[in-house]
Image (cartoon, rainbow, N blue to C red):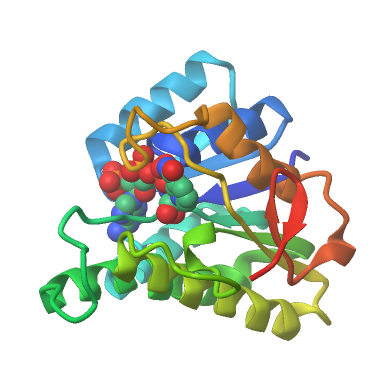
Length: 231
Ligand code: NAP
């Protein structure tokens, strides 16, 4: 039986490319997103590439939606080998932690920080052991030097996600489920913009490697370009 991978936010961008690459490796791919039309289109495109794919409607910023998706997943009668928490947002008006509208902070944290944690909490019961969890994070969240001053709420949301990664790696060690974070680099997507330096193929490479060939002994670490980077 082929391995099953669930990828949040995979109807476009890096998540969709992770689905394509994992599909080509032989995974059964469950793509997911909150926009049903775009999700169906992505599913059709994966099927055209002969990828064994299914879809799951899920808004990671909304606990009711996550629980409804988990109930639907249960009916698929599948186990999950790999969970990739990729869904994320940035918001143009995110310029200052002091002056941002609170709604901006709230939406970013609910999607990028609580989202991956709540999805993991709701789907952990379906996970095979050994298994793998990958958080698509950002070097914008690291605390090892000066911050750049760009998108501060987004950066804080990824700092939170990095901390969740380390904590879950510790909690899941005995269950032999590895938990890692990956920074895709600056990627040409709707989020990254067309001026970004990397293709989606390059951005997806490290998450796909963590989902497939990386040693599970590397749990609890943060990667870019398949190399450990500091938090
Ligand atoms: P993107 O092209 O904007 O795609 C984001 C994906 O997340 C879409 O599939 C979107 O689908 C989904 N999404 C957003 N909010 C969601 C929600 N509440 N529930 C479920 N799905 C949701 O962005 P991307 O560049 O591929 O980013 C993917 C990940 O890489 C993010 O976590 C991002 O922070 C990270 N990242 C990106 C870059 C970059 O340069 N692009 C750099 C560092 C890190 P719908 O809107 O249809 O729901």
